[in-house]
Image (cartoon, rainbow, N blue to C red; front, side, top):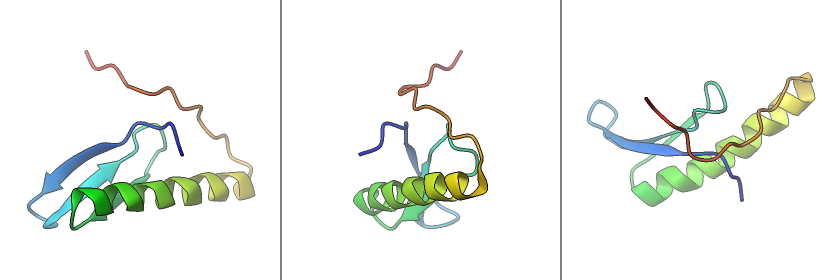
Length: 69
């Protein structure tokens, strides 16, 4: 299980739930249901990390909940 924050919201434009992982640039997933979006996000987080390792890129440490001012 990952420890990255996942932000989920409904998109009327996409007619789907969107799951964003703010600590991993460009890492997003979607799903027709909230649960589908979470499951897709878990998969895409693993793929994002795998690709970053293969390319020798830095992988941000999960900080958990983000604070917004």
